[in-house]
Image 1 (spheres, rainbow, N blue to C red):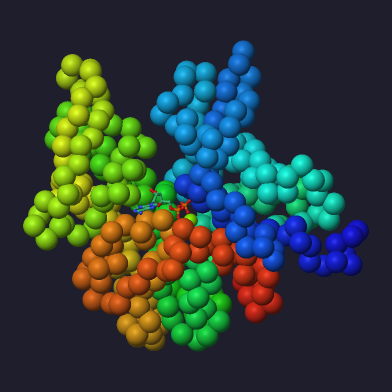
Image 2: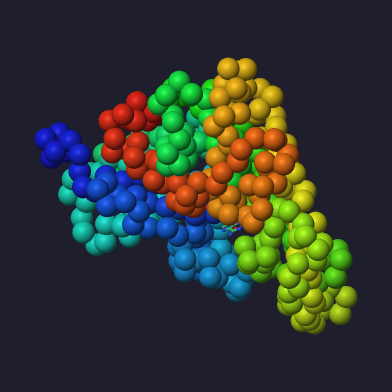
Length: 345
Ligand SMILES: Nc1ncnc2c1ncn2[C@@H]1O[C@H](COP(=O)(O)OP(=O)(O)O)[C@@H](O)[C@H]1O
Ligand SMILES: [Mg+2]
């Protein structure tokens, strides 16, 4: 076996298999792929076939004909559809390696949500093995997020990371390479999108798609109501619920903040519960170290400030929240200091 001699292969990779985005990091190269965790499946004569994966599949979401279905196999933080998830992992691995044969059987490190069951972990491991990995390691997602955010995980200092993804928010207290406390809240960016969809439906009788809601959230969403209560006004198009025709309405940032307040409140509550369950010595460290936000949800305007107000603790957003977990997973693979945090089972 070649990789017995060349212990580390330049094809080794670290994968952040997120509910919204999959990010791949290759040893010695850094991030080489960042695409939505979406698979478009076409059914022809009862037989299902992968039509598109990643960016191409996401563009089809909400716009597919009846024969094509755009699926997010990890949607709520668990693997909703293992077969589709496996196809997706294989597709991305092959995309990274091009048409080239994998001559050296790479090692693959994949992060898993800390709340995932042993069955889910096995499923992820098997999918990576089936895709051609010689050895698969897993790493707990909050640990990867903390390493990627340059937090002091190897020191006897308590720190808190809050990773806000699409399907879930992972809250963890770390110290000495271990997770002292973790909790997973099934609220993340998706629930924020849904909150905007339902607000617009209730208050304006307008039906909008999730992709439209996500765009509104990213461009105009805010965790803090604007100073004048109104902020920017935007025009959004959708289908009128009463007469079924397309129409346009206007909505302001104050209203969007109102729509987002419930899912954001749920996330803050998760943080509060974690703080209440943290040992006093570690809690004391968190007062000094503060809370670090990672994941795409950390980009929500005003969220750090809101969390600061709600917890009374310092809150910072990691430098590149969308790639933190992949970078941390990659570093855990590359750096001997961190290899101890990798899980084999
Ligand atoms: N600027 C932004 N403001 C608010 N939410 C954002 C922003 N950018 C991305 N997001 C949200 O972050 C989520 C994706 O984050 P990510 O960390 O990639 O999730 P996951 O790890 O679950 O794949 C999506 O719900 C997306 O809408
Ligand atoms: Mg994530």
